Length: 129
Image (cartoon, rainbow, N blue to C red; front, side, top):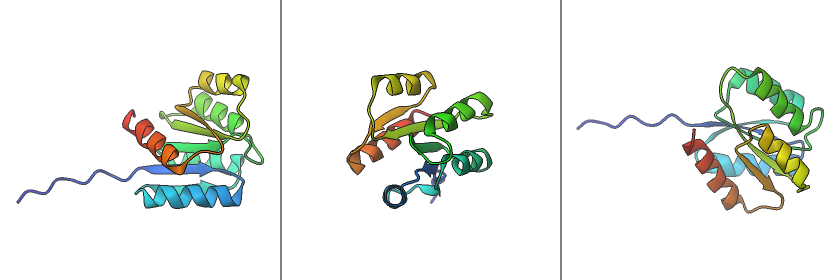
């Protein structure tokens, strides 16, 4: 009997300075079958993104040490590979949403959100890649 090769697991980088939010995201994504790495601030997240080259980055816009916008700007300016990005934010402003879209994010979600909605968004974004 011929075996079907398994798809490689996708790696997701979570950047969120809120310990509880970060832990919840990591737990839910891990349970959904993803390899998850996490950063406590934007500066560390950018370094991890450049070294680990995750399939997807989920970043809070209000990350410590370097905002999510600055992380996205740096990735979009210097990236050598296409990175999928989902933005999480507690402040939904039309101006912020427009700037995120201009930077080429794949999804923009406001808090609070249902974890099932985030997981569906993650699946959709990764399938589009």
